[in-house]
Image (cartoon, rainbow, N blue to C red; front, top):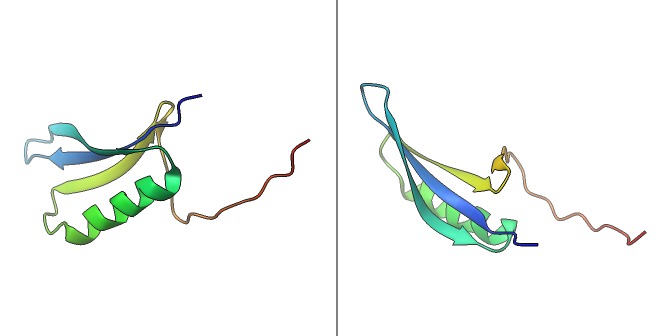
Length: 72
């Protein structure tokens, strides 16, 4: 299964219109999160934000943890 995660830049204009641009892609959530944190730290524009998306939609990531799952 393809697990590509996109780091998407959202620009919100004063008219309320938004544009979306894919800034980075990653094969793991860890790598995508690194990109996301870096872009957010470098961003000084209040009208620009960054979010993570996968094929199902937007991630709501407050905290990232590695969880080991025992094979059933």
